Length: 255
View 1 (tube, one colour):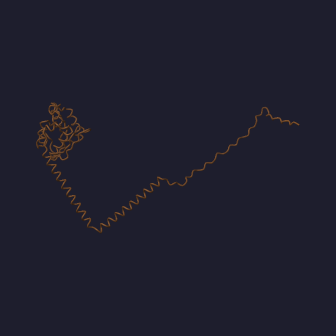
View 2 (view 1 turned 45 degrees about the vertical axis):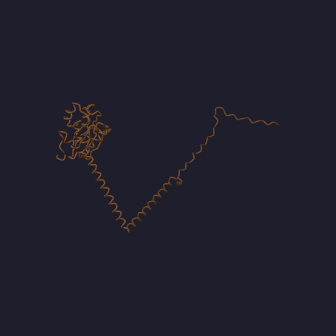
View 3 (view 1 turned 180 degrees about the vertical axis):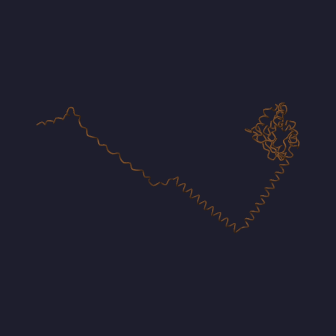
């Protein structure tokens, strides 16, 4: 006998089918982070090893120093011998230094330049020659400062009477046949010599010649000029510049 299938229920018209509510599960609780025990890193291990080595080295150094001091206390005569040797060495070094300075003074006092020698120099060597002449005349602190950023000054020196000299050197390969030194060179060194270096004497020296406008401007700016003729007298003789140039300021020691 054939079974009859049950008829499907149809939802009533006009009434929507009920839906079962969906249950939402609560979010999982987050457990607070608890740091575990720190692991011994390689870097910390190396630092610890280095600290141990440093400490051990310090202990060994202290022990060695203590042993040396103890030995020297027992053998005090060694200190006397070492002190005597050190005194002899120091005396010999001082004597050689004084002798070297004396020879340097002799060479400086005998320093002479001829105009052909000065003409053949490079412009930088000409600055050193002027410095050496100032050293010869007793300016013990004379130094060459010419170069980039020299602000117009090539040689600085303090004479035995306490005056500060700021010197600008103008070298001409052809001597007095070369181009003349003009007023812009004078204005450049005059603008910085007294403000930056506290100059008492501002000098422009050349193995050539000055233009005709330089002398009146130098007198107006209270500057000094040393041309080829003055340079020849100064370099070949033993008289200092302050005896060759007119209207040099009074010495500082007498102010």
